[in-house]
Image 1 (cartoon, rainbow, N blue to C red):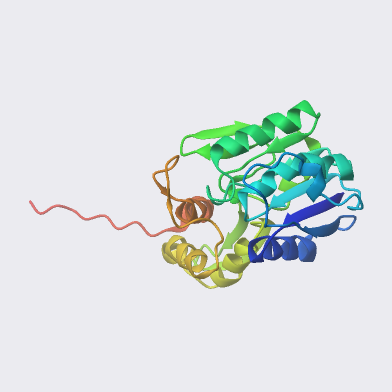
Image 2 (cartoon, helix red, strand yellow; image 1 turned 30 degrees about the horizontal axis):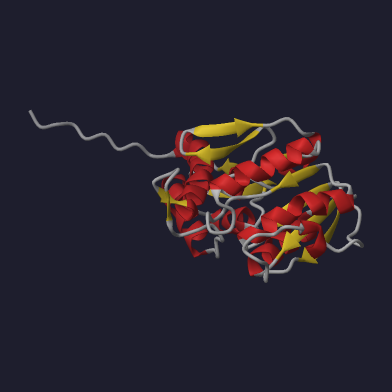
Length: 250
């Protein structure tokens, strides 16, 4: 699979770097540093998109400037890309209205587009858009990417006697690499402490989701991201946790 990452800063660079480092054999990833000095109204987006961008199957829209989203349809036209992942890790970078418009523009061109909010809610079938709503999709290119990068999925082995975590396999990493960081830190942690430790490890990793309160979640997207990972850990260690029962005095 040929991937083009559209970036404007450190957020995109970190994501692209993690994908490049851990992508399966046969994937290639190129980067385009998009312009950030853009007019308020872009009449001719094609004027800002180089004609020599490399061919791509999938575009990762990792820009940190909302105006760059308007360039994505022309990026797809130049590269021949048939699918786009445009995460909403901050409403300042891709407001919900613009995300809806982008999906519509690309659909008119026959290009699939998903806008996971946050990026680490993306699975092979759907993604979050609000606290209680997951949006389904059906596109093999996006699903192939989401097999490896998206909503964190760890496979945790717990010793039934000591109730300590042994091996932790990363089935699906977060695009930023956070799931690998958490997996490395969970080895030796007891089942009782695993959920808390996973949350702390996530908290101390440089999560790139917004820390502002998001109206669709009534929470920060960084906290939403952390909860997705903690829930994955909690479900697997639950059978090994020590349950303390308090008998009321008679």
